[in-house]
Amino acid sequence: QVQLVESGGGLVQAGGSLRLSCAASGRTVSNYNVGWFRQAPGKERDVVAVINWRGGSTYYTDSVRGRFTIARDNAKNTISLQMNSLKPEDTALYYCAARTGTGSLYTRSYEYDYWGKGTQVTVSS
Image 1: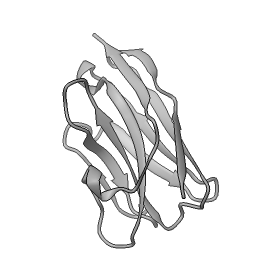
Image 2: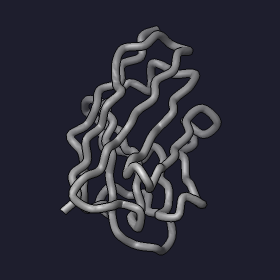
Image 3: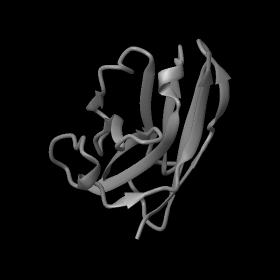
Image 4: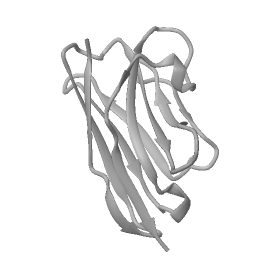
């Protein structure tokens, strides 16, 4: 089993930055694909960014490409999401997720086996 714990959320003004972290325990996630998803009130959980197990391939949803950066540190068993130029529409509960697999990038929430409890990001206008 893999346990994931997110941190780094908070309240920030539009244009500001936040860095989310996800600490994995239970197993090393060095051979897991990992990603960040978000869910706003009344909406579905959507992909934000994912990174493959080697860290060489990434995917970003269109609305965050160029502003957010996903990274992983397999030695520390952590995944991060650097969020710059934040907008009010980025407000959501952000989740870290992991799954096994060395294939292509996985961008759908149902494809992930392990989830954290989320960290709230609120961007004020």
